View (cartoon, rainbow, N blue to C red):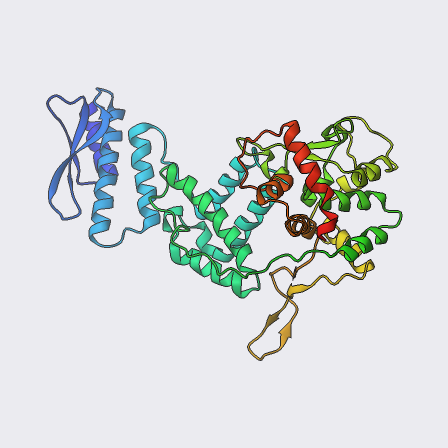
Length: 418
């Protein structure tokens, strides 16, 4: 069989109207095809001319697929999914590699994989839950091409989350994560616009943490009884403003009993490009509580609070819930700001809700208490911010001996501000 006869058979087999020809000053096959308006036009197949029949077959297949897409578009039969498949096929014929495409679900799963490294475990878990909730909400639409996602889809998700009982602040965290995921897709050229960018933020609930009074602090300490780790944790939260997750993971290597300081890198900052290290003084109350701990090891890498270090901060049996029980034992009202309930169309109250029960007092209230008490004691705002490692402090700020002494004097006035 001759090359020309083989070419003819391939042409008939592919069933197209396109034809190939050589073009002066071009090393590639060119084709005559009918466009979406029915008129003939010339296109380059981007496939190099060769005496090998395979190059002609590939070029003709490319031209016929191109013409097929144009004809379908003219008849308004070209769906987005079909178009992507055809473009992918054309790209593979031309370059040897198919076009990389994603569905909404597959993109979010891929994006999560890229976030495993360089993010704190709690942050990754939060991102995973948000992606999972969004995929479940979309249902079958989650399997459609990423390019098919619209602002309306994100808006409906936001409305559903608010309707389910979630706080506006929590929903905004979800929207922020979705924006980040789709911004990455946009930067890589998989989509031309970010559908989450056009979604307005959810209304702020205005929920704020309450502070503990002096008598409540005393009651918390008393309620710990023989739970010396919890007593230490509470004192650390009060005098340093450390977040619960940082208190749980503090190690002996973070402490300097000669300088009476603690040097820590908040977990919230640990995985950022420029993590911020904070140096805070340790008052006698905190040091004495630490030295009184029944710990079996004070090796540098050992946790100061080994039992609490095994806990996650959240969850039904996490450290936050355990602290809530201590508050209950101390007779402290948690100050419910938003109950975990919904009201149905008949006006009946239901306890099932996706939204968390929000209370004004929790372990994080110790951080608020520290800042408020120092403010009441007349300590300048910049000193208060440095003591608790507020985000508005210059990221790479270095604490000198003088800085620590200023903070130490501030701590001496803390209890007087309660």
